[in-house]
Image (cartoon, rainbow, N blue to C red):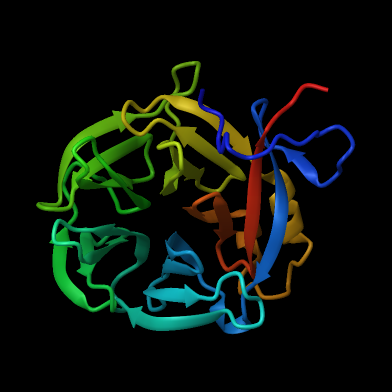
Amino acid sequence: MYLIFISLLFLSQCQDPTVFKASDKVSYIIKDKLKRPADLLFFTEGLTFIADNVLLESTGLYGDSEIHYIDNVFDKQNIELKLRQPIGKQYFGEGCSKIKNKNGKDEIYMLTWKERKAFLLNSNLQLVQELEIPGEIQEGWGMTSYRDKKGDAMLLISDGTNRLYHVDPNDFKVKKTVSVRLENGNELNKLNELEIIGDGTVLANIYETPLIAQIDPHDGKLLDILDFTALIQDVESVKGKGYTDPMFNKVLNGIAYREGNLILSGKQWPYFYQIELQSQQQS
């Protein structure tokens, strides 16, 4: 019931070395490696599609935090940065998301880490309003958005714990909190970058690991944990070819999904990885 991307064709895993096992339920292939130009290497925090070929990315580090568009994502010759908007040297940028408000206009939200500030921006990445992060949320980490049963936009925020917070963008207050636990009852902490995918579940990076959790955002039920160690090994194979700090080779951070296209990235990685997830088959 909870297999990801059930519309994708099942492929045999037995004799194809390019197919990697992510869990007992899911395998994946690296469909493509979309190389970032040297000037597009960022400390990625938030990543989301806003059009078929355009990503919205928020970045971290004090003095380097910004939000911008990356256009022509799938065109390796013409990928480019657009509308760079720094957020101030006193802020460490974190997750971001886009919603369409009740008036049909695009609104963009961006978190900061410890400063307890969030920013509401328009589609031109101009500041509309500075917001206070709700007190229940310990720090700003990851963010994504979804539509509730009424069709209204909601934000989903992580703070590095095992909790996910459902936040109403109309007043930026927490309406619901869910906790995520492993089968043994232990808390699944360090939930970070978030992305709602096609079946309504959320993918969440587990910070400082090669793992991505698949979670039901409405009750916090852990549906699967996907292991992308093989992807990390590919990143490490290009060590020194773009990183400002090699310690970030293993830090998977950045998930974007749109109509079957899944993009994964990380801290100062030289590539966006286009991933196809498939159902595991018994051989």
